[in-house]
Structures are given as C-alpha cells and as structure tokens.
Amino acid sequence: MALLDRAIVRLLPAVPKPVVQRLSSRYIAGPSLDDAIRVVRKLNAKGKLATIDVLGEDVTAPDEARAIAGQYHDALARIDEEQLDANVSVKLTGLGLELDYKLCRENLESVVGDAAARGNFVRIDMEDSSTTDRTLQLYRELHADGAGNLGVVLQAYLHRTLSDLPGLDNVRLCKGIYVEPPAIAFREFDAVRENYLRSLQALVAQGSYVGIATHDEHLIGESLRIVQAAGLERDQYEFQMLLGVRPERADELVADGHRVRIYVPYGSHWYEYSVRRLQENPKMAGYIASDLFGRMRHAVS
Image 1: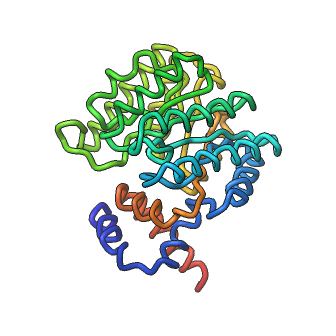
Image 2: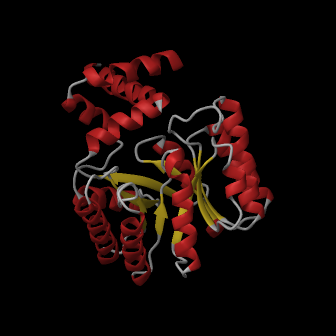
C-alpha cells in the first residue's frame, strides 16, 4: 500500500486542478470564511469542536501577512457572533515570520488579544524544523507576557521534542509531516510512534492540556490507556483530527464521551495546501484515492 500511495503522489503534478479540487473537497472547507463557518456548524451539531485555519503560508510582503491576520480577526468575530464551539490555528509563516520577526509578533499579538477579548483561544501550528526555535520563542514570549489563551504544536518525530516539553501548558501533539533529515527526525514508523507516546506521557505527567492529534488507531488506543490511567477528566485533554479523515472514528470517540476537535482549513490557497499535504503524507493520498474510487463504484453500481 505504501508503494501505491507514493505512486499517487508522484502523479499529482499531472492531475488537472479541478480534479485535485474534487479530491480535496472533503478535507478543505472551501475558499471562503462562509464555507468554514458552515462546516463548523455541522461539526458542532455532531458534538465536535473545531479549529479554523486560514490557508496561506510563506507570504512575500508585509501587507499579505497583515491580510491573513485580518482574516483571523474575521473568523474570531464570526465564531463569537454565531456562538460556535471553535477556536483558530495560525501558521507563523503566514503572519510574516520569514519576513520580519517583529512583524510576525505584532500580527500574532493582535490575533491573540482579539481572541482573549472574546474568550477564545489561539493555537500556533508547527511548521518545518527551520521555524521550530522561533515558533517556541514567540509562544514563550507571549505566554510570559500573560497570554493564557495560547497553545502550540509539537511534532513527535523530531528528536528534540521531549526536551521542548517543559514549561508548555497547552500542546497539540502530532506525529509531524514535513520531510526532515534523519539527523534531527525519526524516520522509522515504530520509532515515531514510540516517541509520540513518550511525549504524551511526559505532557500528562507535567499537567499540560494535550490535544492528541492522530488518526493512527494504535496511538488512539494507547492514548486512551494513558489518559485513563492518569485519571484525567474530560476537560483535561482532547482528541484532534483533520477534516474528512476518519470521521466515523471521531464520531465513536464523541459517543464514548471524549472531546474531539476537527481541524478546518479554508482559503484561496486550497490548491497549494492540497498538493503539499498529499506530498508530505502519502498515506493521506491513499486514503483520498480509496475514498474517491469507493464513491465511483457506488455511483455506477
């Protein structure tokens, strides 16, 4: 199956854009904020929480970074107005991290301050390893300045992750999808799993709120064992999944009484996000292809 997944990824550049859009339509809310809000309403109706992500990274001008920050203000306002159970996730490259650290901090502070005024929360997504130090620095700076409504993401496949945990009180823990060299990242499947569980155990032991972000059934099962063994209450952790990936499993977790948050990306940069996400995670390409072929068989049967 891994060979088939990689073969699908290699074909992506030749796939017409409308086909990629159809492939990704289940995994991206759409190009507009209205699309994201519509999806969040449906998720909330099923007992699921959400986090909204504005697509757009590696901006090339300060005005672009400010515009993305503006979209987050709009998203927070709509969440507030419609009383939705959702927060927002930001990528610092979209807020100008590669242009100017000060600009990025100003944009991040404005979004975090707006969220705080509305009783909401901001999660800083983690990107490739070239941004890890600056991402954690910004998180720690704002947290030290009193931003209690701010969390961050850590990637379990990085060797450094366990040493990054101390002092972090709200963490989304994921495996990691960026292609990194073996000198800094575990490459073996089982090694990543093992470090994920070690990191989760350490976060629980230090009293951090954890977003357990995984679709891996083994990790879901072991994570349930860890939080239950620690005696955590429902409001001390949550599971997190991507929009459109294993929604039935998410439903089961909700039915069993667990908090589940769904990552809801939207925006005009849907094509770049779709291709990159599939290239970085060939297994997801396999999920999508399998889903598409299944729907095609159903349509002709």
